[in-house]
Structures are given as C-alpha cells and as structure tokens.
Amino acid sequence: MTKPKLLWIGDIIARTGFARVTENVLERIKEEYEVVVLGCNWHGDPHPLQNTYKIFPATNRFQQAPFGEDRIREVVEGEKPDVIFTINDIWIVNEQYRRIQDLHKAGRFKFVGYCPMDSYGWVGGISDTANEWDALISYTEFGAYEFIKGGIRKPITVIPHGITDGQFYPKDKAQCRKELGLKEEDFIVFNGNRNQFRKRIDITISAFAEFAKERPNAKLYLHMGTKDQGWDVMQVFGREMVRRGLDPNGRIIMTAQTPNPPAVEVELLNTIYNAVDVGVNTCKGEGWGLVNFEHAACRVAQVVPDHTSCKEIFEGYGKLIRCDHVDVDVNFAREMPCPSDAHLAEILAELYESPEELLQTAEKCYQRAMDVAFQWDTVAAEFHKVFQEVLSDTYELEQKEVSPVAIEKKSKKRKGKKAA
Image 1 (tube, rainbow, N blue to C red):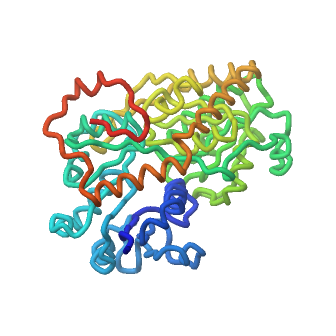
Image 2 (tube, rainbow, N blue to C red; image 1 turned 90 degrees about the vertical axis):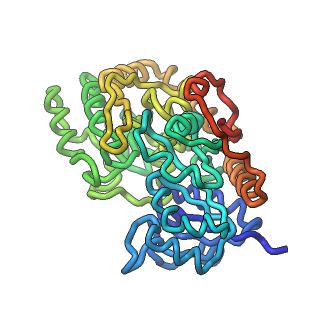
Image 3 (cartoon, rainbow, N blue to C red; image 1 turned 120 degrees about the vertical axis):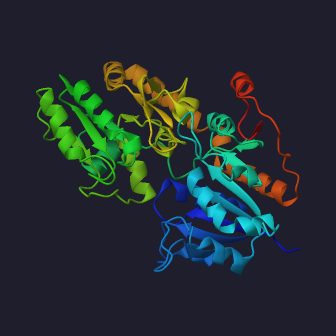
C-alpha cells in the first residue's frame, strides 16, 4: 500500500527549538509517511538526516523568503504531497498558504498549520486564511481560545511540545559547574531566551541587579547573543548594576561573547541547564517557552510571567511573575503583558533565602515536564491522528458560530482534545 506523502515545512538540522520539534515528531511517524521537508534555517550543508528525508532548503540564491514562501509552490508542484504541514507564526503561515491557495482549493492536498499564540486581543491577522485550512493546531488551550476569539470558526486541536528522553535530564550540579568553570558557591540565575524585543531581557537584567544587592555570590547567566535583535546586554547590565552601587565585573556569565545566538550541541546545553540554580523568563508573550520547559526537565526551578503559555504550563508548579503593565504591540495591536522586575527580584530573593523552597519548586517543575502528555511519543501520535483525520475527511466539520463569552466559561480540556 502506498504511503501518503507528507510535506513538512519547518526548521530542521538547525540548532533551534523548532528544529527539535520537527526532528522528534518526524522520527516517530516516518514509517507512516513518505516524508519531504522544506527546511527552514538550513542551507543545504550535508547532514545524515538527508539519508532519511528528502529535504529542500527553504531559501536559495533567487528565492530568499526565509520560511519557504518563495519555494513552496515549486516544491508542491514537483512533489505532489497528500498533506502539507507547517509550523510557524500564523502571519507567516498565511503567506505560505496564499502561494498555494489555488492548488489547495482545487483539492490537490490537505493543509495543516501548527501555530503558536503569544498574546491577547489580536486585531486582524488570525482569520486571514486559516478558516480555509483543513486543520489548525495550537500549542496550548489558551492559544486555541485566542484563535477562536480572533475569528477562527472551526475546531482547533491542542498539541503541546515535548521532552526527549536522553536530551534534557537532571545531572550533578557540582560536576556541571566544574565542567563549565563555574564556582560551586555561586547562586546563578539563568535566562536562555533569544535576545529579541518580545523576550524583554532588560527586565531580567533590572530584576537581577536589584536582587544582587547584598548578595555578592549572585551571578546572572545569559545564554544568548550579546546584541542579536535586542539589547546590548553587557552595556545594560553594567548600567543597572552601577545604578545600584554594584560592580558589574565578574557578575555576568555569557556562553559566548558573540552578537548572535550561541550554537551549542544539545549535550552542552543540558550541562548549562543543570549548572544553574533557577531559570527565568521575562518575555511579554510566549507561544510555548521551550527553554523553560527543557530546563524544568533538568529539575531546575522556573520563574515565568503570569501570562500566555507560561501561565498555562507552570501555574501551580513554578513561580509566576506579576504583570503590572500591558504593552500594545504594533503588529495586530496584540496585548502583551510585561512582567514586573520588582516582583521578580522578590521571587529570586525568596528562593535564595529558602533552599528548601528552591528544591520544592524545582521538583514540581520537573514533575510537570515529565507528564506523559509532554512526551514526544504522545505528541507525535496526536499529529499522526490529525493527519489521518484530514486525509480521510473525518476531521470535525466547520462550526458556524462560536461565542467568545461561552469560550471564556469553558472548563479546561485535556491536551489533544479539540477546542470548540
């Protein structure tokens, strides 16, 4: 029997969170499909995965749109997939879909989008094309309801990201610090997000500087580029420390002194995760928060904002940072709550002063990450189910009316169920 052909559009081979999603899911469903990949953030260098999948770089010399927008049509026409799956922000998936919309309407393939939701109250963008897709998958229940409020009039499946056994797991902290040349007696606060505006690294730095007063063994570890798309973190760190009468020298740790994000192997990243005392995230919106999730799997306490996916994943497990201000973003007027640096400093002080509370929080975060719903075997099975449903035309039919008021009153459903 001929296998259905799956065209997967997303990061692969690259050292990114999206690539880890691609590789972990495909590894578990590859026997069920003939897999072709339009690979983002991969530019054609030889790699063993090319022996397993037929991979096209998303860009070339003449087709330079970064997420395969310029290449998708020629790949679809050449490969003739039965189902197309893409993982990206919804405004990017909208553009990918527009390039092949006529082919989809002609019935040549099924189309499935897997999109993060990182904010509230969108004005436009969400329903531009998504109601024409065969399925929309959200990372979170919060995201599914925001998509519906934004105009989606069809059921939305919720499928989370996962954790891979053998990639991120607890290790001996003292040994990890020895390997990295870090002092055993230091209290290390870690932020491993990308240095870009949505991640609000400036809040992490400000909160740490306040927390570091009268705590000379406190260090801040930033696993990110020194500039990238965001702040000159060394300059901001120096300013915030000096403002509080503190010497910034020797108080910040960088994986690499490079403007762009450090590219490290998973094994080294796991060692870094295990070498620190607490992981923090001060973003103003998060679609999933893979860094915190992976870090939790290392049995390290997580402190995250009280909003979006961070709240859904870590409420009752990690520590939540109060949000005192809502930023209205220029893209679709998204409402994005900003965490309080003062409250984060208080939480860090609490964990510093109470080793028992730190350990208890770390254990709860670990148990959360180890939930069977977040194992890649479970996650991949949910994707396979959706693909089979759309291929057999048994995915739930489009709904005509959805009440936002009713949505807000709904009780939570288990992961993998459809939000309606």
